[in-house]
Image 1: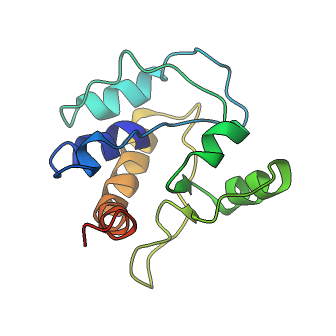
Image 2: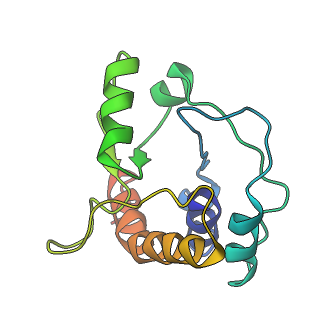
Amino acid sequence: MAEALLRHALDAEAEPLRSMPIISTGLAACIGEPASPNSVRALKNVGIDLVSHRSRALTQELLNNSVAVFGMTGQHLRSIRARFNPVPEHLYLMRGLMPEGVSREIPDPYGMGLTEYEACRDSMVEAIPSLVAFLRKVTGMA
């Protein structure tokens, strides 16, 4: 969901953001699996198609070529730091660039109902403006 939401936001931006590759990966992903039905439904409900998405595993090559890496939880970031070397300089929680006082973690709704997936989606949507502002800054567009 995060990849599709950020891609949707960047499609409205000028170059180079519009063409910036956005890649969602997992630390324990089963490669090639489709998005969960509730992820597909949660995004369909806001007009974004996730049907063709397939899971990918995080690799050192992807990390090395990333402008920024965003995790959903602190545990994700700790796992990246423990498993990869070098660790990317720009490693953040997806909600970590938001103003102080908001929840930083996005709990994984895997195996839960549509309501939890929609709450996860909404938590990601709240973070998108801060991610876009950050990407503008690191690409020299701010």
